[in-house]
Length: 217
Ligand code: GTP
Ligand code: MG
Image (cartoon, rainbow, N blue to C red; front, side, top):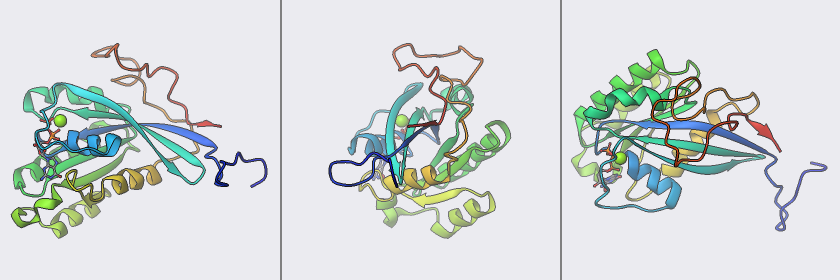
């Protein structure tokens, strides 16, 4: 395409950068932080510490001529943090609801999160369901077909993942990036709680202000 910047290796340079707020939800210990750590840093910790409150990280993926930058809120799954969750999913354009394929209860909890998102998050939110710890399939308690059927019924993306082996981790974020709208200005992404709330803003985190547009060039 004429006029498009070209990298030294001859590949065209992405010409558009889009930022999206993405939240991870799910029962404690299903592997939310591990999935983020794998996606952002390519690492896995056997003894990952349980998250307190939430953690914020960013990572980008390239899709054709677009760089999709994810602003990731990794929430804490312990029940005592449940009331904080709306601060993180409000204004989010994407959510990954995670369960552990070796634990049926976590699948039930994931369904409850999906319902809460369907009722209270942005109507256009892209929701992905991740059946994590796929490397432990010998201890499987949730059948792939059951989760896939639930995802189909609720129009969710679904993949089984393993933060440990990296299986499907990048692919999941890429699939979400593909589903997100790249042309219109993005609402939301405004701070920890989206626009209009000051609760819980972490001043150590990069400012979210003025970053909510899907900007060309
Ligand atoms: P909270 O922060 O308490 O909500 O938990 P979390 O969902 O962030 O889980 P975390 O990433 O802390 O992982 C919990 C435990 O599961 C850790 O010991 C991880 O090493 C382990 N784990 C995470 N993902 C995988 C995986 O894909 N396979 C296996 N075998 N273990 C995993
Ligand atoms: Mg965590």
